[in-house]
Image (tube, rainbow, N blue to C red):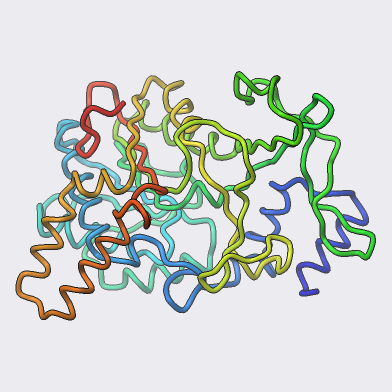
Length: 362
């Protein structure tokens, strides 16, 4: 056992099984052994590569979207652009660079905010963004942001927010937990908890025996905070993540280590833990604040925003090797069998603002 696994086992012996949400929280955010508090997870040398790390084109198209939405909202000044969970700061860096080329005056006036709870990742971001001409500010949560119109950005932030699992047994939904097996190893067990009925799908009462459902009220709470700020102060938001468009059944909890799937219970704190995002639940949270939710696949969105044209422009004067790399990056971002269909894009806007990249989608 590693150190964190021993601590989790001792905690279970003392207090009983942990919910999946509690297990994820300990594995990801434990101050001494947590995945995000102790490791550099991003990029080739880490455990996974996110879209901003794949290609500069991703951040450039996000910047164009933000600029277009800012204009559609009446070009408010001052304005804040806030990235939630900014990783290494690569996306914010590309957005600043692109906005500086589009509208240097706006880029100087924007207050760029990075919402980051990890002190270690905050230092990584400050290193990435060192020398930036923009005004940069760090905050620990959405509620701390300045009272300004805010354009929110989030890439793979909701999937890492802990969720709970429930299994249908004998006509009732019971919580799935992490406990101990007979030989003292971590194992999935049935706990006593039951779900809030209001969070269940309409057909949950007729689900088959053994069906599993994932509920993530903490994710909806984050979207609620974002939507509340947009509704009160103006702005919009765009979020990229992998998941499904409608509520469904099935176990999507996964661990990723060294760019490969790993056993969820094998190495706590040494692998990233995530699950698929329910975009319908996030859309419902935005709707409660009178906002419109627009959803598309990542592939459709990036192509609509000009991915092909941007790739062609970057490759126009490049050598054959560089052109091949650019084409490969574009394919990885948008092809249906790569990130294009699995990843979805959610834009949250006032109803009178139709964002680019979502034509005919609401």
